[in-house]
Image 1 (cartoon, rainbow, N blue to C red):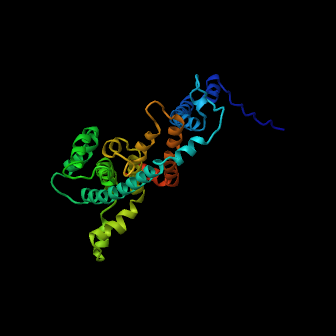
Image 2 (spheres, rainbow, N blue to C red; image 1 turned 180 degrees about the vertical axis):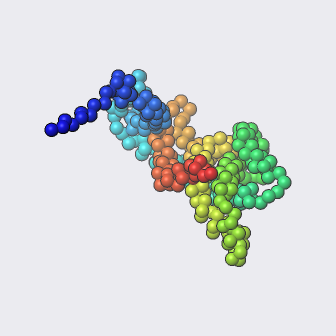
Image 3 (cartoon, one colour; image 1 turned 120 degrees about the horizontal axis):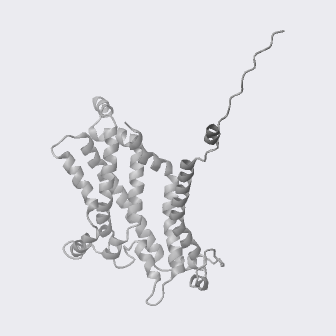
Length: 296
Protein backbone atom coordinates (compact mmCIF):
# COMPACT_ATOMS: atom_id res chain seq x y z
CA UNK A 1 0.00 0.00 0.00
CA UNK A 2 1.52 3.27 -1.20
CA UNK A 3 1.84 6.05 1.28
CA UNK A 4 0.18 9.32 0.35
CA UNK A 5 2.55 12.27 0.44
CA UNK A 6 1.83 14.71 3.23
CA UNK A 7 1.11 18.27 2.24
CA UNK A 8 3.20 20.64 4.38
CA UNK A 9 1.18 23.17 6.33
CA UNK A 10 1.90 26.82 5.58
CA UNK A 11 4.25 28.38 8.05
CA UNK A 12 2.91 31.60 9.51
CA UNK A 13 5.73 33.99 10.15
CA UNK A 14 5.72 36.75 12.73
CA UNK A 15 5.47 39.38 10.01
CA UNK A 16 2.36 37.71 8.53
CA UNK A 17 0.73 37.46 11.96
CA UNK A 18 1.45 41.11 12.64
CA UNK A 19 -0.12 42.09 9.33
CA UNK A 20 -3.36 40.32 10.27
CA UNK A 21 -3.47 41.76 13.79
CA UNK A 22 -2.33 45.28 12.89
CA UNK A 23 -4.70 48.07 13.93
CA UNK A 24 -6.28 49.97 11.02
CA UNK A 25 -4.94 53.29 12.25
CA UNK A 26 -5.98 55.17 9.12
CA UNK A 27 -9.60 54.05 9.43
CA UNK A 28 -9.56 54.70 13.17
CA UNK A 29 -8.29 58.26 12.68
CA UNK A 30 -11.03 58.90 10.14
CA UNK A 31 -13.68 57.81 12.63
CA UNK A 32 -12.12 59.93 15.36
CA UNK A 33 -12.04 62.94 13.03
CA UNK A 34 -15.70 62.47 12.11
CA UNK A 35 -16.69 62.20 15.77
CA UNK A 36 -14.74 65.36 16.65
CA UNK A 37 -16.29 67.32 13.79
CA UNK A 38 -19.79 66.19 14.77
CA UNK A 39 -19.16 67.16 18.40
CA UNK A 40 -17.84 70.57 17.44
CA UNK A 41 -20.89 71.12 15.23
CA UNK A 42 -23.48 69.86 17.73
CA UNK A 43 -22.10 71.18 21.01
CA UNK A 44 -23.29 74.79 20.41
CA UNK A 45 -26.73 73.49 19.48
CA UNK A 46 -26.80 71.27 22.56
CA UNK A 47 -25.77 74.15 24.82
CA UNK A 48 -28.42 76.39 23.30
CA UNK A 49 -31.09 73.74 23.80
CA UNK A 50 -30.29 73.00 27.44
CA UNK A 51 -30.16 76.74 28.13
CA UNK A 52 -33.64 77.10 26.68
CA UNK A 53 -35.10 74.56 29.12
CA UNK A 54 -33.32 75.78 32.26
CA UNK A 55 -34.88 78.10 34.78
CA UNK A 56 -33.36 81.50 35.50
CA UNK A 57 -31.54 80.35 38.64
CA UNK A 58 -29.78 77.48 36.89
CA UNK A 59 -28.90 79.61 33.86
CA UNK A 60 -27.05 82.09 36.07
CA UNK A 61 -25.46 79.42 38.27
CA UNK A 62 -21.68 79.28 38.51
CA UNK A 63 -20.16 76.98 37.43
CA UNK A 64 -22.68 76.20 34.67
CA UNK A 65 -24.31 72.80 34.55
CA UNK A 66 -23.57 70.58 31.58
CA UNK A 67 -26.69 68.50 32.26
CA UNK A 68 -29.85 70.46 33.05
CA UNK A 69 -31.19 70.00 36.57
CA UNK A 70 -34.48 71.67 35.68
CA UNK A 71 -36.88 71.36 32.78
CA UNK A 72 -39.16 74.31 32.10
CA UNK A 73 -40.97 75.49 28.97
CA UNK A 74 -41.57 79.01 30.22
CA UNK A 75 -38.89 80.40 27.91
CA UNK A 76 -40.71 79.04 24.85
CA UNK A 77 -44.01 80.35 26.17
CA UNK A 78 -42.49 83.80 26.64
CA UNK A 79 -41.11 83.72 23.10
CA UNK A 80 -44.44 82.90 21.48
CA UNK A 81 -46.31 85.36 23.70
CA UNK A 82 -44.02 88.22 22.73
CA UNK A 83 -45.47 90.84 20.41
CA UNK A 84 -42.55 90.85 17.97
CA UNK A 85 -41.31 87.26 17.51
CA UNK A 86 -44.00 85.86 15.21
CA UNK A 87 -44.16 89.00 13.00
CA UNK A 88 -40.38 88.95 12.54
CA UNK A 89 -40.48 85.20 11.86
CA UNK A 90 -43.07 85.84 9.15
CA UNK A 91 -40.86 88.60 7.72
CA UNK A 92 -37.88 86.24 7.49
CA UNK A 93 -39.98 83.59 5.75
CA UNK A 94 -41.27 86.09 3.18
CA UNK A 95 -37.90 87.71 2.54
CA UNK A 96 -36.05 84.38 2.26
CA UNK A 97 -38.67 82.84 -0.03
CA UNK A 98 -38.95 85.80 -2.38
CA UNK A 99 -35.19 86.27 -2.54
CA UNK A 100 -34.62 82.58 -3.27
CA UNK A 101 -37.21 82.55 -6.07
CA UNK A 102 -35.77 85.70 -7.65
CA UNK A 103 -32.22 84.38 -7.32
CA UNK A 104 -33.24 81.17 -9.09
CA UNK A 105 -35.05 82.98 -11.91
CA UNK A 106 -32.25 85.47 -12.60
CA UNK A 107 -29.57 82.89 -11.89
CA UNK A 108 -30.99 80.34 -14.34
CA UNK A 109 -31.09 82.89 -17.16
CA UNK A 110 -27.60 84.22 -16.44
CA UNK A 111 -26.09 80.76 -15.97
CA UNK A 112 -27.68 79.50 -19.19
CA UNK A 113 -26.31 82.46 -21.12
CA UNK A 114 -22.82 81.93 -19.71
CA UNK A 115 -22.93 78.18 -20.38
CA UNK A 116 -24.38 78.16 -23.89
CA UNK A 117 -23.82 81.50 -25.61
CA UNK A 118 -20.38 82.45 -26.88
CA UNK A 119 -19.45 86.10 -26.61
CA UNK A 120 -16.39 88.20 -26.00
CA UNK A 121 -15.47 88.51 -22.34
CA UNK A 122 -17.49 85.51 -21.19
CA UNK A 123 -14.89 84.44 -18.63
CA UNK A 124 -14.51 88.02 -17.44
CA UNK A 125 -18.24 88.27 -16.80
CA UNK A 126 -18.25 85.10 -14.71
CA UNK A 127 -15.20 86.30 -12.80
CA UNK A 128 -16.88 89.66 -12.16
CA UNK A 129 -19.99 87.91 -10.88
CA UNK A 130 -17.96 85.77 -8.48
CA UNK A 131 -15.90 88.75 -7.31
CA UNK A 132 -19.04 90.30 -5.83
CA UNK A 133 -18.91 87.77 -3.00
CA UNK A 134 -15.36 88.87 -2.20
CA UNK A 135 -16.54 92.39 -1.50
CA UNK A 136 -17.11 93.10 2.24
CA UNK A 137 -20.85 93.48 2.64
CA UNK A 138 -20.46 95.77 5.60
CA UNK A 139 -19.02 98.34 3.20
CA UNK A 140 -22.38 98.36 1.38
CA UNK A 141 -24.39 99.32 4.47
CA UNK A 142 -23.62 103.04 4.36
CA UNK A 143 -24.39 103.62 0.66
CA UNK A 144 -27.51 101.44 0.84
CA UNK A 145 -28.77 103.27 3.92
CA UNK A 146 -28.31 106.64 2.22
CA UNK A 147 -29.93 105.38 -0.99
CA UNK A 148 -32.90 103.65 0.63
CA UNK A 149 -33.63 106.48 3.06
CA UNK A 150 -33.24 109.25 0.49
CA UNK A 151 -33.59 109.10 -3.31
CA UNK A 152 -35.24 105.66 -3.32
CA UNK A 153 -37.17 105.59 -0.07
CA UNK A 154 -37.72 101.92 0.67
CA UNK A 155 -36.16 101.90 4.13
CA UNK A 156 -37.80 99.48 6.55
CA UNK A 157 -39.57 97.55 3.79
CA UNK A 158 -39.16 94.10 2.28
CA UNK A 159 -37.44 95.38 -0.91
CA UNK A 160 -34.80 97.07 1.26
CA UNK A 161 -33.69 93.59 2.35
CA UNK A 162 -34.51 91.59 -0.78
CA UNK A 163 -32.28 93.73 -3.02
CA UNK A 164 -29.05 93.38 -0.97
CA UNK A 165 -29.86 89.74 -0.22
CA UNK A 166 -29.95 89.13 -3.97
CA UNK A 167 -26.44 90.52 -4.13
CA UNK A 168 -25.54 87.94 -1.50
CA UNK A 169 -27.15 84.91 -3.17
CA UNK A 170 -27.13 85.60 -6.92
CA UNK A 171 -23.37 85.13 -7.56
CA UNK A 172 -23.38 81.74 -5.84
CA UNK A 173 -26.49 80.67 -7.76
CA UNK A 174 -25.04 81.73 -11.12
CA UNK A 175 -21.70 80.03 -10.51
CA UNK A 176 -23.37 76.87 -9.22
CA UNK A 177 -25.83 76.51 -12.10
CA UNK A 178 -23.32 77.45 -14.79
CA UNK A 179 -21.26 74.34 -14.04
CA UNK A 180 -24.40 72.18 -14.25
CA UNK A 181 -25.54 73.65 -17.56
CA UNK A 182 -22.08 73.16 -19.05
CA UNK A 183 -22.18 69.45 -18.15
CA UNK A 184 -25.34 68.89 -20.21
CA UNK A 185 -24.78 68.19 -23.92
CA UNK A 186 -26.26 70.88 -26.19
CA UNK A 187 -27.72 68.15 -28.42
CA UNK A 188 -30.75 67.96 -26.14
CA UNK A 189 -31.70 71.57 -26.81
CA UNK A 190 -30.91 71.29 -30.50
CA UNK A 191 -33.23 68.29 -30.83
CA UNK A 192 -36.00 70.21 -29.08
CA UNK A 193 -35.48 73.23 -31.31
CA UNK A 194 -35.62 71.02 -34.41
CA UNK A 195 -39.05 69.89 -33.21
CA UNK A 196 -40.16 73.52 -33.07
CA UNK A 197 -39.46 74.41 -29.42
CA UNK A 198 -38.11 77.84 -28.64
CA UNK A 199 -34.89 78.33 -26.71
CA UNK A 200 -36.88 79.47 -23.66
CA UNK A 201 -39.15 76.42 -23.82
CA UNK A 202 -36.13 74.11 -24.11
CA UNK A 203 -34.57 75.80 -21.10
CA UNK A 204 -37.57 75.42 -18.77
CA UNK A 205 -38.86 72.06 -20.00
CA UNK A 206 -35.59 70.21 -20.68
CA UNK A 207 -32.54 71.86 -19.12
CA UNK A 208 -33.97 72.88 -15.75
CA UNK A 209 -35.61 69.48 -15.00
CA UNK A 210 -32.40 67.67 -15.90
CA UNK A 211 -30.41 69.89 -13.54
CA UNK A 212 -32.97 69.65 -10.72
CA UNK A 213 -30.37 68.51 -8.11
CA UNK A 214 -28.28 71.60 -8.79
CA UNK A 215 -31.31 73.87 -8.74
CA UNK A 216 -32.48 72.45 -5.42
CA UNK A 217 -29.00 72.73 -3.89
CA UNK A 218 -28.67 76.34 -5.03
CA UNK A 219 -32.15 77.14 -3.70
CA UNK A 220 -31.45 75.62 -0.27
CA UNK A 221 -28.09 77.36 0.07
CA UNK A 222 -29.63 80.69 -0.96
CA UNK A 223 -32.53 80.28 1.46
CA UNK A 224 -30.20 79.48 4.35
CA UNK A 225 -27.96 82.45 3.57
CA UNK A 226 -30.90 84.87 3.53
CA UNK A 227 -32.56 83.30 6.58
CA UNK A 228 -29.37 83.78 8.61
CA UNK A 229 -28.77 87.36 7.47
CA UNK A 230 -28.29 89.79 10.35
CA UNK A 231 -26.23 92.66 8.95
CA UNK A 232 -28.71 94.03 6.42
CA UNK A 233 -31.69 93.46 8.69
CA UNK A 234 -30.05 95.35 11.52
CA UNK A 235 -29.18 98.44 9.49
CA UNK A 236 -31.94 98.67 6.88
CA UNK A 237 -34.98 98.13 9.11
CA UNK A 238 -36.22 99.76 12.29
CA UNK A 239 -39.28 97.86 13.54
CA UNK A 240 -41.28 94.68 13.12
CA UNK A 241 -42.82 95.86 9.85
CA UNK A 242 -39.89 94.36 7.92
CA UNK A 243 -37.36 93.31 10.54
CA UNK A 244 -36.10 89.69 10.17
CA UNK A 245 -36.21 87.28 13.07
CA UNK A 246 -32.42 87.27 13.45
CA UNK A 247 -32.69 90.90 14.51
CA UNK A 248 -36.05 90.54 16.24
CA UNK A 249 -34.80 88.08 18.86
CA UNK A 250 -32.42 90.72 20.21
CA UNK A 251 -35.48 92.58 21.48
CA UNK A 252 -35.70 90.11 24.36
CA UNK A 253 -32.75 91.90 25.95
CA UNK A 254 -33.28 95.06 27.96
CA UNK A 255 -30.91 97.73 29.17
CA UNK A 256 -29.76 95.85 32.26
CA UNK A 257 -30.89 92.26 31.60
CA UNK A 258 -29.79 89.67 29.03
CA UNK A 259 -32.58 87.13 28.59
CA UNK A 260 -30.45 84.05 27.98
CA UNK A 261 -33.38 81.66 28.29
CA UNK A 262 -35.62 83.48 25.81
CA UNK A 263 -32.73 84.04 23.40
CA UNK A 264 -31.86 80.34 23.45
CA UNK A 265 -35.49 79.30 22.98
CA UNK A 266 -35.90 81.71 20.07
CA UNK A 267 -32.69 80.44 18.49
CA UNK A 268 -33.93 76.84 18.68
CA UNK A 269 -37.27 77.81 17.12
CA UNK A 270 -35.54 79.71 14.31
CA UNK A 271 -33.26 76.75 13.60
CA UNK A 272 -36.10 74.22 13.29
CA UNK A 273 -37.32 75.36 9.80
CA UNK A 274 -33.80 75.02 8.40
CA UNK A 275 -33.39 71.55 9.91
CA UNK A 276 -36.72 70.43 8.48
CA UNK A 277 -35.85 71.88 5.08
CA UNK A 278 -32.49 70.12 4.96
CA UNK A 279 -33.95 66.81 6.12
CA UNK A 280 -36.69 66.92 3.48
CA UNK A 281 -34.34 67.71 0.62
CA UNK A 282 -31.10 66.17 1.86
CA UNK A 283 -30.88 63.70 -1.03
CA UNK A 284 -31.27 66.42 -3.62
CA UNK A 285 -28.79 68.63 -1.79
CA UNK A 286 -26.17 65.88 -1.64
CA UNK A 287 -26.82 64.97 -5.28
CA UNK A 288 -26.44 68.61 -6.29
CA UNK A 289 -23.26 69.21 -4.32
CA UNK A 290 -21.57 65.99 -5.51
CA UNK A 291 -22.78 65.87 -9.12
CA UNK A 292 -19.94 68.02 -10.38
CA UNK A 293 -17.38 65.79 -8.68
CA UNK A 294 -18.41 62.59 -10.47
CA UNK A 295 -18.95 63.93 -13.96
CA UNK A 296 -16.09 63.75 -16.36
